[in-house]
Amino acid sequence: MSLGLLGRKVGMMRIFTDDGDSIPVTVVDVSNNRVAQIKTPETDGYTAVQVAYGQRRASRVTKAVAGHHAKAGVEAGTLLKEFRVDAAKAAELKAGEVVAVSLFEVGQKVDVQGVSIGKGYAGTIKRHNFASGRATHGNSRSHNVPGSIGMAQDPGRVFPGKRMTGHMGDVTTTVQNLEIARIDADRQLLLVKGAIPGAKNGQVVVSPAVKVKAKKGA
Image 1 (spheres, rainbow, N blue to C red):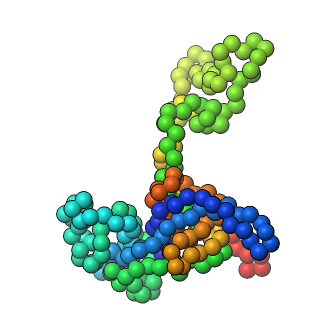
Image 2: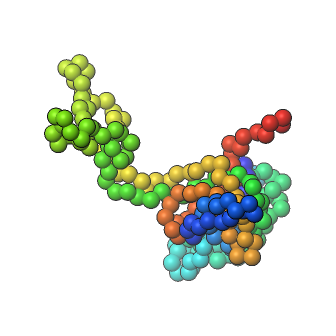
Image 3: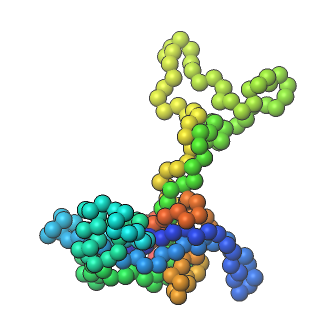
């Protein structure tokens, strides 16, 4: 139950520490995150903050969505998501207010959610990390195939859930416990250590990590 930010994956680069170490980072643009609605137990049954990101003309959204943003006095966006927060945090915000990148700090652990890059129709070797067959010595045209999938007369069928060929990627996925390496407050950019899901210009959700390991002695 914590507030996060919506953003756009700009791309990857590297930064250098004072000791000269190279750190790969992903740049995330989290500018102009604005509050579209404050949900309360009295009206909605729970407490949450709805955040909008991006720019989209009112003529390019449905009338219901356009009216929803107009009620809060904010511009319609390309991404809309709500975060469950406690009542104290919700009371600090109001509709139309901008949530800045100062919500996070350098060194903080975050979870980043996005849509992974689609790989199309893939075989079992690539899709499930199966081992290939032998390259020689009697192997005839059975190098990158899954092999036998069935059984004997009993049970005489293939069980549901068998890992086989199929569509790979293009699914919502989350990478947890990434570290914020640097923050550019002027340009509202987050530099996250490591890789995050999705292609360039993909939309992502950055939120405080939910599985942060407790420090020793804590």
